[in-house]
Image (cartoon, rainbow, N blue to C red; front, side, top):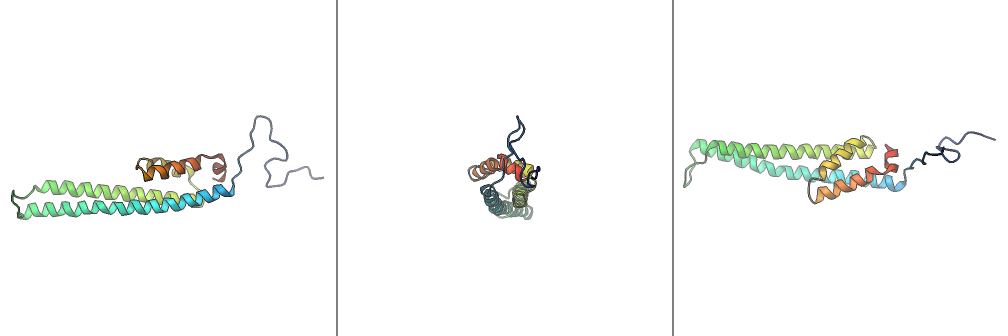
Length: 155
């Protein structure tokens, strides 16, 4: 008679007193992690697309700055070149911020797919919660799934 448990079984009998059974990952956990990874990629694409709106501000700011330098043609005179520079800088900041966030969300999706860097995905989910309403729903669902003991066992 073999006195050792099979290799895939954590305990041959019940665990020692005071120690709970470790949560075992289920097929549902795997499925939900794969779905979350796909949702991360979609959300990252949407963030990248919204980042293009900042480029409109950059173009408009450059137009204002060049119109002020060339004298422009307007009823009240040309706007100061500094206004155009500020508008362009704000547009560039918005674009870079959203693209950086999109990159982090996409990287989090790849990490979810590979079952790596759970803490990074957890932090990105918290950051996504600030975007109401879609980011909040996306972040909350990610936090719920990543907080389960059975999902922690996968990582």
